[in-house]
Length: 289
Image (cartoon, rainbow, N blue to C red; front, side):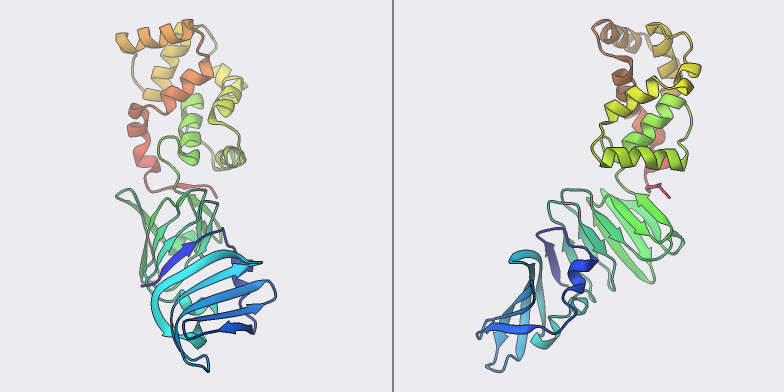
């Protein structure tokens, strides 16, 4: 099993930069450095004066900046420059601090996306892949292999995207719950994708909630508009129950203290009770088309 660590987000264009014939920059019995224009590879291992030997780690860089390091393997040094040779086993893959895109390959791989909005591109239709929640992450089964993943937010397919960022406070899950809370219906795929894209680009869930509260559809559901009626509507449309006296008193106090209707809506949508109510619909990911 190789360990693959991303230092910077790397897309397919980056890896294609290593498909040519490199030039030898330097060589010792423990380090070989090759380059092809701005693309370079630093290969560590045990080597002979002719450059043959066994490599145990390699760092791929662009313009002097390390992007990806492979380690924990022993292969012929002549096989290291072609990146595809290093993705064929069961690998442990760790993302950078940015928005990474990983490309699914052979082997049963273990992904930890880390920070940022991370995506695994499977290059097939969703119907070829089974995705299920497992512990704090997910399992994806495809073509006889099983990948495990944590802190991976999206899975890309040729026919659309499956969002895995569905927990409390995470983009797709928060938008899904807010949509359902505000309009008392499951979100349509096109509308959901639009609002998730807005959050991805930096719009806050609170700002989206304000837009929902000001929409004609919301006003038709809540024609009275006074605080008691609105709170009762939140209980009914979000939690699907009558308000309890303690909760009603609390939210009435919050509203009287200046908390606006859209912020109360967000609180209802992201409450533990509503998280539980919507878990079945979100736990294995949400299809964004």
